[in-house]
Image 1 (cartoon, rainbow, N blue to C red):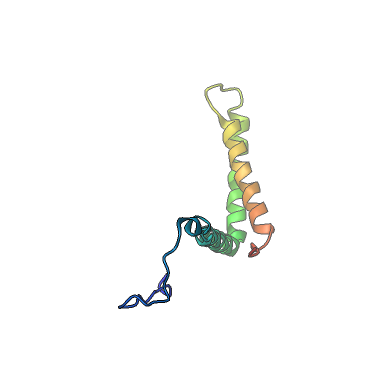
Image 2 (image 1 turned 135 degrees about the vertical axis):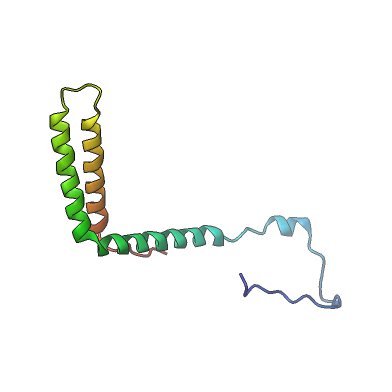
Length: 112
């Protein structure tokens, strides 16, 4: 943004011509905001992947132990209709699977 500085002439030169409306309508806007958003999203995902991959050995064990604990709670509370232990177990297991897929898929590649 800073490098787009335009110097305006102090006097209007003779070679400047007025622009017609049809010429202005034919100008298509640049797609820089979309490109910048895509780049920012890629950088956020890359940093997130790096942080998760850095602590993955410990995080994997913690998530696995949590899933086992939720599995025992699900079995213990199976006959209680007021407990949603089955859904809680499924949610914790889905998080473990999602993190496993995210980390093992490798570092996100930059696509331009």
